[in-house]
Image (cartoon, rainbow over all chains, first blue to last red; front, top):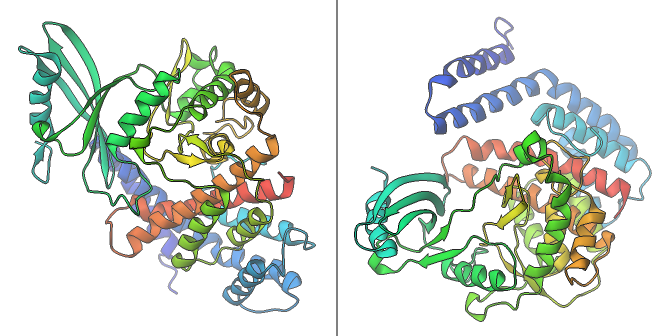
Length: 118
Length: 335
């Protein structure tokens, strides 16, 4: 991929422009423009942190499933095993791995969300 | 002029003013507060020789299928508001169920109750410091009154307990095709811990910070938005109020972001409610996070399938991870 500019620099630039013009809009469009800027900010964070989060998720899922694989493959397999009850809250390391994966995803999606342990 | 379909709401409200307040009455203010895919809410005022009235119009903008819809009809909502008010629960005083003469389609009018509904303000604005510590107990008292109300037969309410809700939301989740381990784990976890059956009661169905009109002087002044009312487990209304998604920047206060479990449960019992265990409330709180997570997926899906052009709906899909961290916190702490 080309680096001049990087995709996350483009999304960041468009997001900043939306913030600049937002105050001049009517209330409904001000709200929607904020949602649009938030969406671009999430895309920007995913472009910056997504690959690393995915690699870390794979590392956390491997010991639970007992083998390696792609993120998509491991995630699918874990869902199947959870659904069948072969893996559950009592499985050693499961909650810790899911917590770490969800926190990485939350840092991309909604970094300001306040939860009971934030 | 705001026209949807054939209806000019301002024009129709002008005529309704005369019907409600007599000759010489006129519409002095009409403002749309919310407009969703199927319903909208208007605030309007009438000046008449008999005095000024501040009112709220709720109307459907798209027909609902009574078989499949989770929402009650506005006529059912009217019956509910009257029924709970008769038991002393604060609902907005009912004024008028619209008919064909009004030209507003399916709609009803209630009085406007003064106060605040924005959760963040209720939880953080110093204006509410004095009443905030009273709210959890007041919610418990009001829920006991709602749950003691005989369901009005004309409202034709549906029944849903925890097993029905889990089935419903799991089906929606499966259809979405999403693969989210935390949601899978939560479905399984809750199915293995279904609460013992209890006699079903009338539920508000959407009892949370955001649907409660809070007065800075007296606290809980009115419970709004009755369209998700149904029959079921009384702990459902409590658990939904405690779901972290509605704590608005105060996750440390489990009841709505304004109070504690003990006050909610004590208020419920003091007002004659059958005692409910904290474990049962936390079961429904966990199910609340799971439901809201699936609803966020649903809103994304309604955009992805081309049904709704919007920037809001796809972005709500990126809120599923909020419910996932709440679920992990609940599953790790236990019910």
